[in-house]
Length: 423
Ligand code: CTP
Image 1 (cartoon, protein in one colour):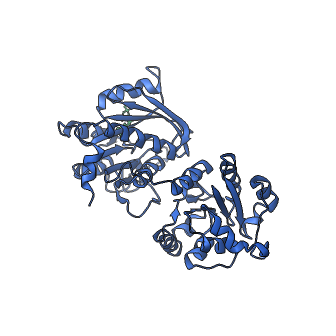
Image 2 (tube, helix red, strand yellow):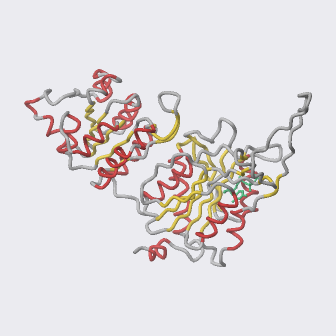
C-alpha cells in the first residue's frame, strides 16, 4: 500500500520513526512528509534512511514531478502522526501552505490524524471544533492517550503508542469491523471514591484507561455505548458515546441499575470500593489539640460493606441470561493462589459470563499503558492470556470474546437479534 506519513512539529515526532518502521517492515511503501517544524525534532536523514526514499520537505522540491499534487493523489492512506493543533487547524481550514497540507487537499484516500499536544491545547474549543470538522469530512481522528506529557504535566494529549497507531491506520483502510453493530453496551470505568468528609475520600488507583479503550473499540465496532465514568479526570472519547458520571459505589449502583434493562452487554470495568465509611462527616474532620500540644490521637474510621453491583446484576437478570455480563478482577495473587486461581474462584462466585483478570500492583496495570490479562469463560471454554499488550489490544481481545459468545448464541441473545435495535 502507498502510505503517506505526515509528521508535524511536536516532540512525539520521534515515535513516528517506530510507526514508519512498522509500515515498511510490513512491506508498505511510505513517503514521509515532515513539516518544517517536524524537522526541528527529527531530521531528513532519519526519515530518508527509515523509509528508503528521498524526503520532500517543501513544495519547491521536485517541482518537475509536481510533488504537491502527486504525493496526495497517489496515496492509498495518509496518516499524520503526531498531528499538532496547528496542522489540524490548517487542514480543517483547507489551507495548502506547505507540502503536507497540499498533500491533504489532494488525497482522496482514507486520512487519519493522531493528535499530540498539551492538554489545554487539545481541550481548547478551537481544537475541538477543528477535530469535529475533520471528523465530519470522514477523517479518522484517533483520541490522544492520557498520561505524562513533555513537561511535568499529565492529561490527555499524548501520542498513542506506534502499534496502536498502526492498527488504527489499517482499520481506517480496511472494511470497518461492525461485529457489534446495534448492540447496546453499558460500560463502567475508573474507580469509585467513598467520601469521608467534604475534603477526603477513600479511593483506588484505577485511571479509567482500560475502560475508555473498551468504550472506543465497542464504538468503532458499531455498538451504542454508554460509559459510566467514575472519577476519570479527562474523558476524550468520540462524541456519540454517552458519558454519565458517578462518584461513589452507591451512586454507581443506582446509575447502573437504572440503565441495565436497556443493555445487551454490561462490562463492569470500574474498580468499585468494597467498603465505605459508615458515617459521612458534613464538616471537615479536624485534629484535636490538647492544651499542652501533646495530643497525637487520631479518629478511628468505621467502614461498612458496599453492595456488590456485579453480583447483583447477575442475580437479577432474567432466566434468558441477558444481558451478557463481563466482570473484571484486579488481583495481586497471594498465598492462597495465583492470579488465575483467584480469578477462577471469583468467576464462580460472581456468576458473570466472562471475567477479565489482571495482575495489579503499584507499578502494574493501574495508570500504565500496557497490561496482561487472562480472559476466563463461565461456559468452560479454555481461558486466554492476552499480553503484555496495550490496553487497546486488550479491549480488542475482550470484544472478540464477547462476540464469540454472542455468535454461539449466548442465552437468547444473538448478534442478529440485537441488530433489531437498529433504528
Ligand atoms: N465489583 C462490583 N461491586 C463491588 C466490587 C466489585 O460490581 N462492590 C465488580 C468490579 O467492577 C469488577 C468485579 O466486581 O468487575 C471484581 O472486582 P474486584 O474488586 O476484583 O473483586 P471483589 O468482588 O471486590 O473481590 P475482592 O476485592 O475480595 O478480590
